Image (cartoon, rainbow, N blue to C red; front, top):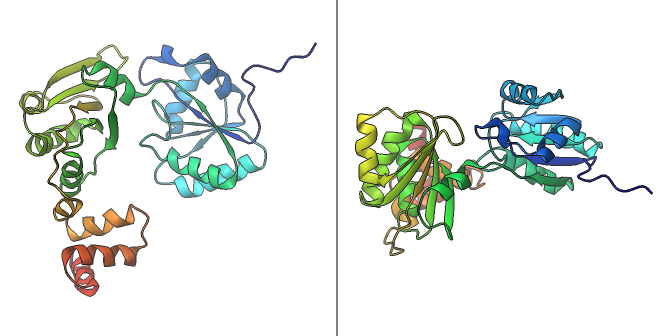
Length: 289
């Protein structure tokens, strides 16, 4: 009697495959099966993924898919999927498509009628949340903050009074500046958990306040990538989106709307209206900037 293969890898399907965030033993058996059976793998960094696959004895065609080639590479990948091939999408660590360009190819697949399946596993954000010692029943994932100071402060003002526990990612070289902004905008007594090197030998979880975190990293150099889990606010926000936008430079203000999908000229028009000036006046400032 013939029985259907369990966890069969299907043709014309994109698989979102979670990979370990540190400890290589955290990969699932299903993930290894899918990675070894798909026609090709799309990776954020093919060199890192090649090393990972080598640890499991998997040899597979790798194609590059990351922030700066996601449009062209995504279209090529979807074309292959529509042609009947199967693909696994991976990031350097954790779950692809979460604060990651993978979200674009998932949307492209949805628009093109391509089946997308999930192979769940490690996720730094959820792991750090579980370790934080802060409320976990309601939380909001904010991912990476904007790199420019004005945009970062505007985003923090937007969520300052959010009652959900907040989750942020941050790189070590930007950590102290971010913590200083958070302490100023959220208040120094707001509780925070900082997790780094999760599942690795030097795993560390620091539970303190924002003021305490600023003091710590003023005296100590940050090392590794961080997940910041911050206690929710009181919900009594007096900060409007307009207040937050007022902190932006003209260029940052326009890009705020472009990031929401507006065409360039429409974004300039919207930003000019916010700032109480004509579109031509704002356009002149952008050129001078």
